[in-house]
Image (cartoon, rainbow, N blue to C red; front, side):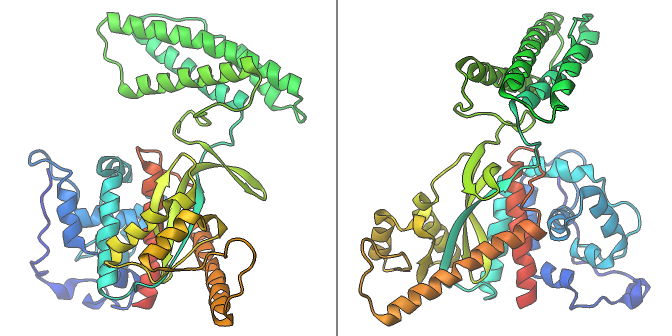
Length: 439
């Protein structure tokens, strides 16, 4: 159930409001709050609740906390504590009086992210950007495009370590469920742990040692999987209801074992749709070829920058060719601004014949390097091309700024679609801070 908060009734005794009954209107949190369409977002927020039951938390409080988290870089626990001490943050979250008691438990934020889902955060983006565009804080200038990977907060994957993680989860689950169904199978967990630690502590790991450790982990995991399946069958025979999360994790464990066994049997290091994280099975290795980061583990995003503001136009955990999304970038630009961009700038990858044809057909000026031998063009055109190529560095700077100051270098949400929610909210927080400086 969701019940709207009365925001029109005035405070009865404003003279009792702390700090003289007045806050500094030029404060950054108050200026950012004026740019967010709270009423429209509350209508969208209400759709995720029924008409019965206990009233849900206030929309502005929840949305405000979700945005403040990314604008401050604090954890959920630290954020709730910080807001309880800061009157400006409380005003940002919709409070009209200073609140000293706990406004909500920090775990509520995780539950709300899972409940709202990625579609709500897309609406949050659209409605907020619409206000910024209408106020002419964001102007429809030429667009710069690029793609990057947003790394996940996972342990650097290796085959032996991944199998050991699966084994440890299987052992814990077998022990817990075994007590319920009255079974206590022999898991060989102590011996398996000792073998793994002996391998992990080796400074120099030869191919022979890696293959030996991997074979041992595969044998332990195979045994534990059989034991786990038998316990599941026993629980179902007794009419016990299993948690969906346990069944989902068991399927992931089986898939990891199948992939690792296939790679070990064929003596290869690659396999289709390879899982590199047991707790985040959707993460895929994406080869980038950059110095120091040949392979990154996380979702890949195609982004556009307009007038210094960054927009996420496409996000996926599978690798994709960013140059194939040119039409999608243009469609997203038209959806935001109602017209085509005056210019389009990207690196050499975007200069395909198909993309050149799209730009010529739509009469959009592009800064692609001419095909074939260097054409004899006018100095003015050549100067414009060089200027646009220099401007292309701005989107690289924005991506670096987001990864350095807004957590885009380490995705920490693990709820469904949590990676995209983290990235979209982080970019929105960065854009709101930029807008507050310009307003």
